Structure formats: structure tokens, C-alpha cells
Amino acid sequence: MALKPSSPASTTEFPAVICTVDVVLLTLKDQALHVVLVDRDRPPFAGVPALPGGFVHVQEDATAWHAAARALQEKAGIVSPYLEQLATWSGAKRDSRGWSVSIVYYAVVAFELLPADRPGLRTAPIDSLPSLPFDHGEMVATAVARVRTKSQYSSLPIYLCGERVTLPQLQAVYEAVLGEPINKVSFRRKIEELGMLEPIAGETTMAGAHRPAQVYQLRPQYRRKLSVVPRGINALG
Amino acid sequence: MALKPSSPASTTEFPAVICTVDVVLLTLKDQALHVVLVDRDRPPFAGVPALPGGFVHVQEDATAWHAAARALQEKAGIVSPYLEQLATWSGAKRDSRGWSVSIVYYAVVAFELLPADRPGLRTAPIDSLPSLPFDHGEMVATAVARVRTKSQYSSLPIYLCGERVTLPQLQAVYEAVLGEPINKVSFRRKIEELGMLEPIAGETTMAGAHRPAQVYQLRPQYRRKLSVVPRGINALG
DNA sequence: GAAATAGTGTCTGTCAGACATTATATA
DNA sequence: TATATAATGTCTGACAGACACTATTTC
Image (tube, rainbow over all chains, first blue to last red; front, side, top):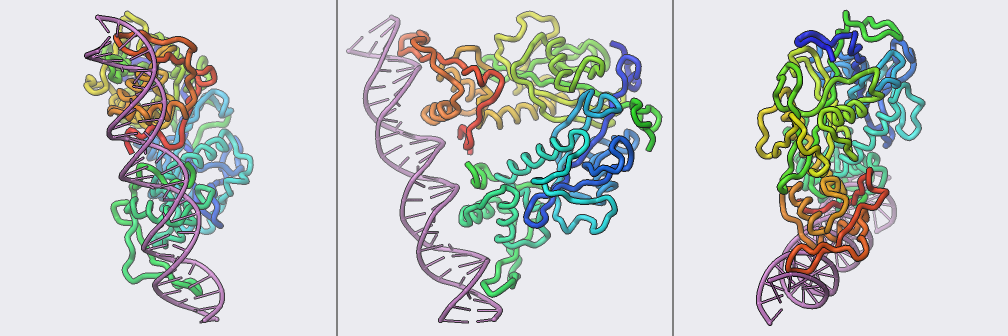
């Protein structure tokens, strides 16, 4: 049990662990959840689409969260307003280079905020993912489950929308995330209870031969913080 | 961006990260949640009570979960039936020895399963914790919050009980964990719905001058798996 | 006015919690 | 029989979901 105090981890008795971060960045495209993938720029799996991520840079990153934010910026060109830790995958077998740890974060972002034509960047629908390297498939599945759970009782899906949104639009977003229809009256009651939106006075969409919808915007105090309700938007029990 | 393929992490461009695990082991003593602490056996903070944990041993531990289970066994002498990942703490500042990662697990265990008189092992009530080294205080707070949340809709608190339990006993455990009284009728409805317990035919406690309580045991299929209900034991909203 | 979607009023079934009642032990 | 706790029956208020109705636009 060596490792001298105040020295970096010895590579003799405790060989260095490979420490990386990965980000499951989810977005909504064609009314379906998609995950953002980037082509890996080095082996293993060079050129293969994978989650944006990379090594922790101990000189540069104050914490793994900062490493994840940096990876998201460098690999996908995105600064997400919401970036939260998901879980950590680790072990001897998951990476051919050695015993490795990946601290995984997830983010949700409006499709319009993604860079338009960035080489090597793509989105894949979560219902028909390509085979992903390492345990990235499992990470995506875990992130989707987390986002679905959180969406049942919080304002999380608002980050999938643009700055301004109508209630019918927002309901369609919730339904796409949760994967099932929501009662309109109940939905509006919950959004009211969440209290995160405010109507933009006088502003309505005129999107067809019917009554226009009121346009809302996110209240400033919820731009980076979720609002939650105790009993959930009961799309399912 | 060095790091040659299929070689261990270079210590030049990416200095080794210190990779540890910690375990927040919670138990119930005198009807109050306690956390298990062990005296640290080396610097920094040698001799100070802290969470059981230690370095990942890359030769020995298949994953961080296995490292946590091993730490729990070695430091606290416990094999917990429930050991789940909580979150990961990381950063340059949290450990004086360098940039470090701690993958934290939490476990809940009946007080009777703790070793009786193990030197350096103690429990501390979570309401009046001593000052803990590193960010262990934050880890305990996060674990307690997680256990409270999970207890609202799952059978998690059953792991705080012995093999055989009565419903009044179990209700007292839930109340201790959640920190507030629960309606008796609602509680029994939820336990029924969870379906994890079966009555032991004919077996009752005779603990005083009153009607005895039926003794139950955990159904085998829930010995290592939680049972959950959709809408929760509504102690709070 | 017809059509289409936005938005609201109201009823009902479900469920959590309150309260009351019955059951069973000891003293 | 008194007392204490276990266990259950029943009522009620809150709330989610269903349904119907009104509102407002274009054609």
C-alpha cells in the first residue's frame, strides 16, 4: 500500500487509471429524441461516431464538469445551458488501453443551437442508434431514461425548445420526450404549477387557419435552473 | 494530444489522476440514520474518521463497484446486499496529493450486521456529524438525500431491518428515514402494493400487553433488488 | 359560415389521509 | 375489565384525465 503522501499517484503499485469524460447531448429533431455524435479523431475506433468526450486535462480542468463542458465546446461547438452528471463507467475491460474511468454528463439542447455544418458532427435518433464504441450505447440509454424520468416532474424539456414557445409546441416536446400523449388540461395545469413560463404580452403565433397561440418565454430565474413539481406530469403513473 | 494507443496513460501530457472509491454506508441506530466512519490509516488526515474507501486496485478490481465492495469489506467488515453508485466527485483541489476522482457508492445495512467491536469503526448520526475530511460531508448529504428520495417509492428501507420484521416496525423505519410521520393506512396499502413482504404463517411478536403483530419476511426475489411503486409513499407531496 | 386549432369549464374516478371500529394480547 | 397496540373499514378532499364548450384565426 504505497503512494507517498503529497506525490502524484505512483505508476508502480497503482498504475495510472485512464480518466476521461463523455457527454450524452440530446436534442429534438423531427419530433424525436436524437443524440449528438462526433467522429473520433484517434484510435481506438478512429473515425467512428461516438459521444463527444476526451481526457481530463489536469492542468486545465478544475473538475470533471469543466472537462465535460470543454469537450462539448471543442468537439461539438456547443455551450449547453444544462449539463449535469449522469454516472460513471469504469473497469479494466471497457477500454483496450487499460483500466479506465469515464465520468459521463448529459445535456439537452435545442436543435437550432447545434452548429449547422460541422464536419464529423451528426445526430442519430435514439430509437435506431448505430453501434457505438466502448459502452457508449449503455450511456445513451441511461441518459435517455434519466431525461424521461426528470421530464415527468420538471421543466427539463424546455431546454429542447427555442427562446420562445407556445404551450401546444411545448406539449408536443414533452410528448416526444416521454413517448406518449399527455392530457391537455393536465399538462397546462402542470406548466402553470411549474411557473417557469411567462406570456409575452400581445405576442401570438399565426400559423394557419385557426386561433393563434400565445407565445411564452422562460422566466430569467429558470434559464439555468430546473423547476420541479412534487407529483409529476402524470403521463404515466 | 499524446497518449500512444494501447499504452497506459502517460504521466507527461496527462499526469496520472488519483482514482479512489468511497462508500457512504448508512444504518439505523436509536431510530435515527447514522453513517459508518472508519479511522484513516494514512495521511492525509491519518487517524481522522472518514468514509470507508481507498484506491482502485487495477490488478484486483474489475470495476469501481468491485473496488467499493472490497473497501467496504476491508475497512468496515461488511458485505452489503445493496451497493449502488451515488455520484463522482473530482477536481484539482479536493485532495492535496493532486487531481483526483472519487467514485462514491452508497449502501444501507441493518445495524445488527455491523461488526460489533471493530477498532476504528464507529457510527455518527447524520444530524450531528463531525467535520469530515475531503468532501466527505457533501457525499454523506448527497447519499442521505438519495436514500430519502428512493425510500418514498421503493422498498429500500427494508435493508435497514433484520430478516424478519413487523409492519409497525417497518413503518417506524420508514418514518426515521423520511423524518416525518406516515399515515398508517396509506403505508400499509403501499407495502401491499410493493409486494416485497410475505407473512410468516402463524408467527407473531408478543411484545407487551396488547395484540401481537404479524411477522413478515422479504420475498426471495427482492433480497438484492428493490421493489418500486409509481406514485410513492406520500409522506410528502 | 366552415374548418381548424387554442384555450377553458366542469364532471368523475382514483387515491392519500383522517377517523372510527374491531381484534387480541397482558395485567 | 382496563389498557395498549395491531389491523381494518369507511368517508372525504385533492387531483388527474375525459369531455364538452368557447375563442379566434383563415378561407
